[in-house]
Amino acid sequence: MYAIVPWIGIFTVLAGTWLLLREFLVKRAGLSKPLFWSLFALAGIFETQYAPAPRAGFFWYTCVAHYNIPFLIMALTLVGALHFTLDAREGHPVREGLRYLLLLLGYTYLGGASYPPVLLSLFGTALLILTLFFRFRGEEKELCRKRGVMLLLPFLLEVAGLLISMAAPGNHVRGGSHFGFSVKNVVMAGGEAFLHAITDSLQMFLSIRPLFLLVTSSVVLMLCTYRLGKRGFFRHPLLFLLLAYLVNVSVYLPEIFAGAKVSGGYTDLVYFVWIITLVLTTVYLTGFVLEFLLERRGENGLRTESRKRIGLIYWIAVVLFLALFYRHLIGDSMDYICLQYIR
Image (cartoon, rainbow, N blue to C red; front, top):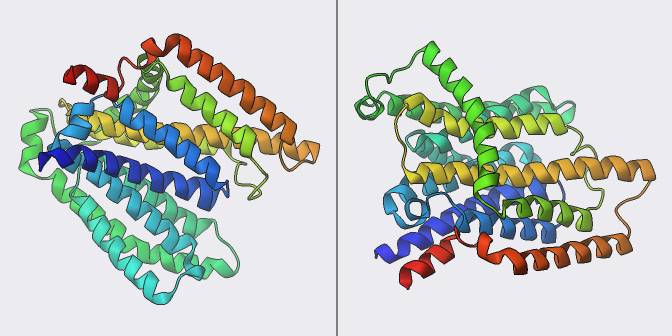
């Protein structure tokens, strides 16, 4: 039965990534499905092939159960919360009632799960609730505030579970003599997490050699497929950069606050979140630049000839690059490691 663990690990990571990317790219940004599937495939390749500790993140059931499964539940609950609140007018009452019940169960489960998915969920949900109360105006205002109030219950259930989990005696054993909640510890951990999010991002590009291809491919795919969609969606690049940065900071906080060595599953989860935010940030910044330039030129998208030329030149360059340097790019991939082990 243990042979199914890698399949569970891979499925939970890819399913969570699929949910989050689809919600942002297709549902909220109004981008094309072919673009979404292409970006999802690229993100999935880097998540599964270049995870920092694949033996823990994909082959060890303890880490799969402790990190990967909560990651999927976190993605399900966040997407469900977005649909429950932002799409309230479109839902059938029975379906919305069932969705709310599932949200209660999902948030309650996350309260006792590993800390990174909990903090991601709390950060995203708190941001959503604030948006519901302060952004919407007119006819949507009352309904959005009502759904925001309803979302407070699962949010508080998750907070309660987190507090109980933090008070568990085992945390003091694992964290050592310096473990404990105090304003000083929180401030110190927060400052270190802010630095870690920057230094580790740079280290990712140095340690994963083909990672730059994820960024360049995302940009080229946007150039070749983008059409002016939902007006104003790409108008806040600095705010989006800040939110993406804070998302990454939140997953570093538990490790730094505890001051204890973490398992490889934790490191992998941090990496999965970073890959998702890297793709979304690249898409958002590219969309901002494209929208700005296209509106000034009065066009809906790049000309067909320009799209074909950009795509052809880029993919020829990628093929040549891979043909010349493939030995230096696959050495740390999971498939290569597995093949070497079999030999």
